[in-house]
Image (cartoon, rainbow, N blue to C red):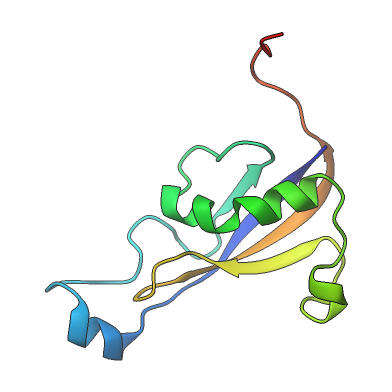
Amino acid sequence: MKRCKITILKTTIHEDLAREYAAPGFTKCPMMREGQVFYADYAKPAGFCDEAWKAVYQYVFALSHGAGQFYYGDWITKEGVAICSCNDGLRPVIMKIERTDEESTLDYEPVR
Protein backbone atom coordinates (compact mmCIF):
# COMPACT_ATOMS: atom_id res chain seq x y z
CA MET A 1 0.00 0.00 0.00
CA LYS A 2 1.24 3.48 -0.88
CA ARG A 3 0.77 6.72 1.03
CA CYS A 4 -1.27 9.50 -0.51
CA LYS A 5 -0.53 13.22 -0.45
CA ILE A 6 -3.55 15.44 0.20
CA THR A 7 -3.08 19.08 -0.79
CA ILE A 8 -5.64 21.74 0.10
CA LEU A 9 -6.17 23.57 -3.20
CA LYS A 10 -8.94 26.02 -2.32
CA THR A 11 -11.09 27.11 0.57
CA THR A 12 -14.32 28.54 -0.78
CA ILE A 13 -17.59 30.03 0.40
CA HIS A 14 -20.93 30.27 -1.37
CA GLU A 15 -21.76 33.85 -0.36
CA ASP A 16 -25.39 33.66 -1.51
CA LEU A 17 -26.11 30.51 0.50
CA ALA A 18 -24.18 31.80 3.51
CA ARG A 19 -26.21 35.01 3.51
CA GLU A 20 -29.42 33.02 3.53
CA TYR A 21 -28.55 30.14 5.87
CA ALA A 22 -25.36 30.74 7.86
CA ALA A 23 -24.91 32.12 11.35
CA PRO A 24 -23.55 35.65 11.81
CA GLY A 25 -19.79 35.83 11.37
CA PHE A 26 -19.68 32.73 9.14
CA THR A 27 -16.43 32.52 7.14
CA LYS A 28 -14.47 30.15 4.92
CA CYS A 29 -13.38 26.94 6.65
CA PRO A 30 -11.50 27.78 9.84
CA MET A 31 -9.72 24.38 9.94
CA MET A 32 -8.05 24.03 6.55
CA ARG A 33 -5.70 26.45 4.77
CA GLU A 34 -4.83 26.60 1.10
CA GLY A 35 -1.46 24.97 0.50
CA GLN A 36 -1.65 22.67 3.54
CA VAL A 37 -0.34 19.16 2.87
CA PHE A 38 -1.29 15.96 4.67
CA TYR A 39 -0.20 12.35 4.13
CA ALA A 40 -2.62 9.46 4.59
CA ASP A 41 -3.22 5.80 3.85
CA TYR A 42 -5.60 3.79 6.05
CA ALA A 43 -6.16 6.45 8.74
CA LYS A 44 -7.09 10.11 8.96
CA PRO A 45 -3.99 12.26 9.28
CA ALA A 46 -3.49 14.32 12.43
CA GLY A 47 -5.06 17.76 12.16
CA PHE A 48 -7.27 16.81 9.22
CA CYS A 49 -10.95 17.76 9.48
CA ASP A 50 -13.20 14.81 10.42
CA GLU A 51 -15.92 15.82 7.96
CA ALA A 52 -13.43 16.31 5.11
CA TRP A 53 -12.00 12.85 5.84
CA LYS A 54 -15.47 11.31 5.56
CA ALA A 55 -15.74 12.85 2.09
CA VAL A 56 -12.35 11.73 0.75
CA TYR A 57 -11.26 8.59 2.57
CA GLN A 58 -12.59 6.24 -0.13
CA TYR A 59 -10.41 7.96 -2.74
CA VAL A 60 -7.38 7.76 -0.44
CA PHE A 61 -8.08 4.06 0.14
CA ALA A 62 -8.51 3.34 -3.58
CA LEU A 63 -5.41 5.27 -4.63
CA SER A 64 -3.35 3.72 -1.83
CA HIS A 65 -4.29 0.30 -3.18
CA GLY A 66 -3.33 1.07 -6.77
CA ALA A 67 -6.41 2.60 -8.41
CA GLY A 68 -5.48 4.44 -11.57
CA GLN A 69 -8.27 6.47 -13.11
CA PHE A 70 -11.79 6.77 -11.74
CA TYR A 71 -15.12 6.61 -13.59
CA TYR A 72 -13.83 5.01 -16.79
CA GLY A 73 -11.23 7.74 -17.28
CA ASP A 74 -13.77 10.47 -18.05
CA TRP A 75 -13.23 12.45 -14.84
CA ILE A 76 -9.57 13.13 -13.97
CA THR A 77 -7.15 12.32 -16.77
CA LYS A 78 -4.03 12.08 -14.62
CA GLU A 79 -3.58 8.58 -13.25
CA GLY A 80 -3.29 8.27 -9.47
CA VAL A 81 -5.02 11.61 -8.79
CA ALA A 82 -8.45 12.64 -7.50
CA ILE A 83 -9.85 16.13 -6.96
CA CYS A 84 -12.47 16.15 -4.19
CA SER A 85 -14.25 18.48 -1.84
CA CYS A 86 -15.52 18.22 1.70
CA ASN A 87 -19.21 17.89 2.57
CA ASP A 88 -19.75 21.50 3.67
CA GLY A 89 -22.27 22.91 1.21
CA LEU A 90 -21.74 26.49 2.36
CA ARG A 91 -17.93 26.54 2.43
CA PRO A 92 -16.45 23.54 0.62
CA VAL A 93 -12.73 22.88 0.71
CA ILE A 94 -11.22 21.53 -2.53
CA MET A 95 -8.46 18.93 -2.20
CA LYS A 96 -6.08 17.10 -4.52
CA ILE A 97 -5.30 13.53 -3.55
CA GLU A 98 -2.36 11.89 -5.24
CA ARG A 99 -0.69 8.54 -4.74
CA THR A 100 3.00 8.74 -3.85
CA ASP A 101 5.72 6.14 -4.32
CA GLU A 102 6.21 5.97 -0.55
CA GLU A 103 5.23 2.68 1.08
CA SER A 104 2.77 2.86 3.92
CA THR A 105 3.73 1.42 7.30
CA LEU A 106 1.53 0.33 10.18
CA ASP A 107 1.85 2.40 13.32
CA TYR A 108 0.08 -0.16 15.49
CA GLU A 109 0.31 -3.87 16.26
CA PRO A 110 -2.51 -5.77 14.50
CA VAL A 111 -4.62 -8.07 16.68
CA ARG A 112 -4.42 -11.60 15.38
